[in-house]
Length: 87
Image (cartoon, rainbow, N blue to C red; front, top):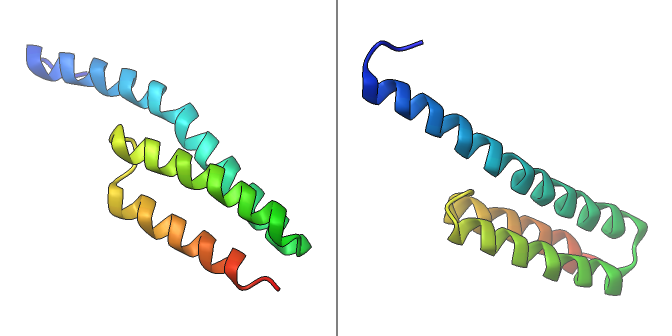
């Protein structure tokens, strides 16, 4: 535990941020896994629908600063690449 007052405050706010961001990141992981699972089944329409929802969640998380905007773009791109590879 830090001794400096500002450091004590930053430890507390870091914990609060981590607690708030954790569930959002978990939702992102779940959405990404759903896209991959549906893509593995080969259902292109359902995969595209889940990709749209996952992309929206990633964009929202990037806007709020939970995920870096380039990381969100990279994840969206990789998911889209898998969905677009389906026939």
